[in-house]
Image (cartoon, rainbow, N blue to C red; front, side):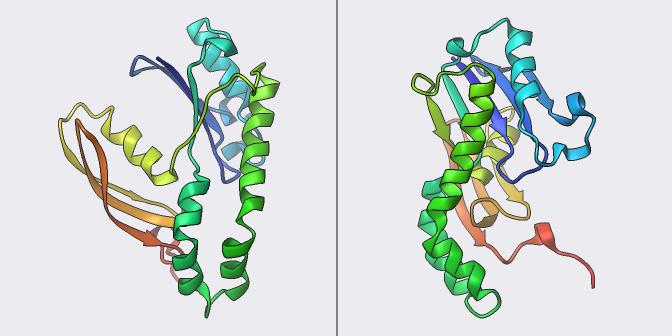
Length: 191
């Protein structure tokens, strides 16, 4: 199985990685090609092409493209996000609750534009939306070599979740607790 992972859904640190039968063949950040730190606002076109070239593959050889953002996860947690932000950031909470299809359109446009520029036929490409924090913990656990582990992902935010705590074993990754934004150690700063 050949899986191409592309990122980033939040406008920075764009990258691509290629796995073949569970082995990492190539992984690179776009800034390595453009020399622009964090590749802000850039698509991972050079990264995708590098991964394909490294493996000697064409776009049609890829079985799945994985992307670390999930509309389903956003929809499932949006009411909780609204309740958590209604007093501190009501406009943001309302927007996440009512206008989240715009976010889906933005993520879809970003990912499909980058893939099309690399020669992918989006009518034939199998595309998988992956919850942001599940992508983080998956990349850590499945390449760790350990049979089971506690997993923790903390960053500024994913779709709406800022922290995921769970466990993983050969059967998969299981969520125990999620912390919803705006509470986030990933954006904690001193004042």
